[in-house]
Length: 375
Ligand code: KG4
Ligand code: ZN
Image (tube, rainbow, N blue to C red; front, side, top):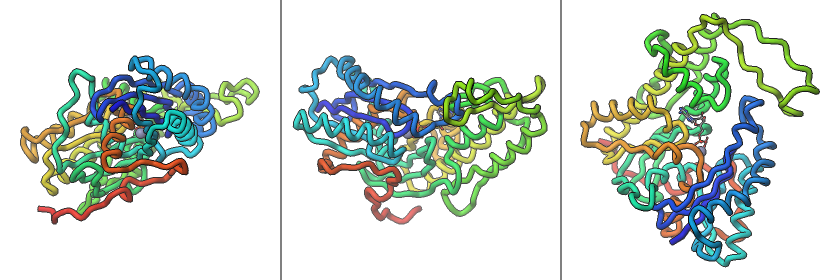
């Protein structure tokens, strides 16, 4: 079954064709990073306009890369939420138009569920073995940080979530504080590579007795520390000559030549990653997980991948698989949407022509089942 996936929930315009939920025939992503860089973050109006111009060429490219014609598609799947309303609308309307014109089923996908299903997809000749249930998934993206117990396809139970910033947001804000720009996760990771993580002892919010997270404390600690090394901001360019146009321009914070930016980045990354990995491993232990999954943009972080493997191995042994998607399926893409749609369709989750966007759609309302009491 050839499923076309479309993803426009934030700042990537993406389309992909995936066969039977596993085999990726094509995966095309038009990134808007250059569009938002001058502003230091995503500007929703610019994102929506960017999707309008990119979506049709991106869908055509996904078909071309898969060597398929439109008539070869069996299903059209699209992210309907959560995400930016104006951005989601572009993908949903293109998907509806294609499904209607081709007379094919339309499937509306939850973006968070798609991130989880990135762990089921791979190259056509060697898709990954399906992860074993029950599994615990640490879903860490720009807008979400959730610990989820998944007992079967489409069966989710929330174990914990962030009480304030999402993990990706913590990386993005940390990068801003250190003058490293946008997107922050890769910038922090790059800076941290030459730094010493034990140089600064930043706070960890363990929030004992539960599986929730909090990153506002470590962010404030970084703000205070970074102030010590900061130099005055350079004068602002006059508005007329600003490359940012009518939207607010981002001026990176400036630091002296000897500021320990690499050490600060490494210490900050270590603090964020440690809490995520330790708490995910504990949840896996408590709920008898047979697999531990990592998903979402922050799953691209090597320090997090390694630390999670270490924590799971020390608490549960080396035999418990820790899985994460290949890098290109961690950050936003449409292959994960097409992959998730295969399983959604098997559960009968087909959308009607009245399908709309759901900017704040949480994963938990989809299907929350009681699980046997924790060990
Ligand atoms: O899943 P995603 O592409 O979009 C959302 O659904 O939010 O995640 C984007 C987030 C951003 O906050 C970005 O800074 C973070 O993922 N990210 C990373 C890395 N690559 C992307 N965070 C840490 N390390 C990375 N290598
Ligand atoms: Zn995402």
